[in-house]
Image (tube, rainbow, N blue to C red; front, top):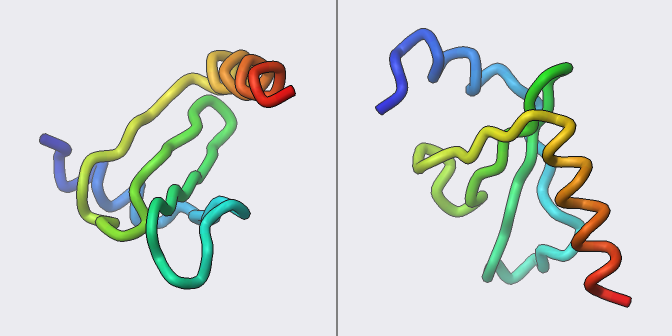
Length: 70
């Protein structure tokens, strides 16, 4: 469970919806980032769980995912 202070900081972030998310809903992911961390959440459940990943690890994941789509 997140503390109230942590939750308030996460609420202040600028969240961006995935460009792959359609206007009809469905599987929608949002991300927000700080200098040290990338946060990922379900856009349909904005008060639900948030995955927080160090920026270096996120960059590795994105590189891997990009290679996997080719």
